[in-house]
Length: 83
Length: 151
Image 1 (spheres, rainbow over the protein chains, first blue to last red):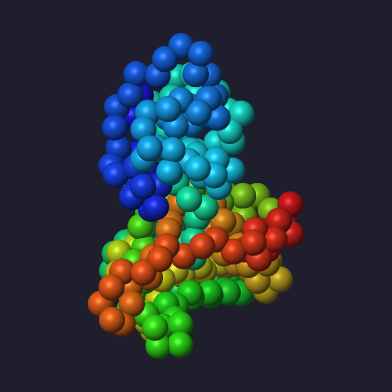
Image 2: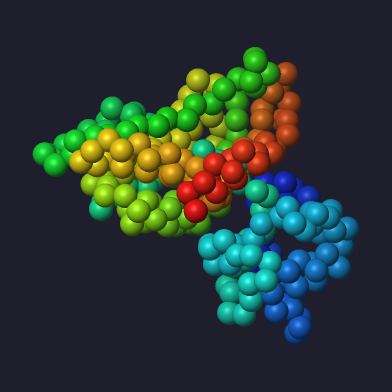
C-alpha cells in the first residue's frame, strides 16, 4: 500500500510518500504505526507521541483501531490547522 | 442544496463569489459570509505557508458541507480555501451560506468553520520577517472545543 505524509510528519520521516509491503499481523492503523516505528529513528521521531499523529485511510479520517485491510493509501499527519 | 468547494492557490473575490451564489435566485433571504485572513502576529510574520492533502481536502470539505446541508435548510453554500504562501492581510478561507432566513445561514457558517479548522487536511507554517521558516502552527484545543459544541 501507499503511505503519504504531511507537514512535520513528512519532515521528520524525510519523505513525502512510499510503497510498503505490510507484514502479516498488522491489522489496524495503530498496528501500522507500531510497525513503522521499528523501521528507523526517523519513524520513531515522527511517531514519538502516537496520540498526536492523525491518520486517514483512502482520504477519510481513521481512528487508531480502524482496520487497514484493503486500503490503497494511508496518510499520516499532525492535527489540522487550516481555516 | 448546491455546494461549491474549491481549493486554490489564488486569492478570491468575496463579492464575485456571493454573486455566483445568489444570481438568478429569488428564494434566498440571507447570505452569511465569513472570510479568514492572514495576521502578521504583531509584525513577526512575512507569510503563512499552507500545506494541504490534495484530493482529501476537497472530499473532506464536501463531507462537511453535506453535514451542514442535512442539518440546516440551506439554499446553497460556497467554501474556498487557499494553499501555498499567503501574506498578512490576504484572505485564507471563505465560507458563504445561503438560506431563506438568517438563523440557519449564521449557524451553518459557524459550523462549517469549526469543522473546517479541525477536520480539513490543511497545515500552516510560519514564515518570519527575518527570512527564516518558522514553526508549524500548533492545533488549538479551543478549536476542538468549538467543533465539539455541534455534536
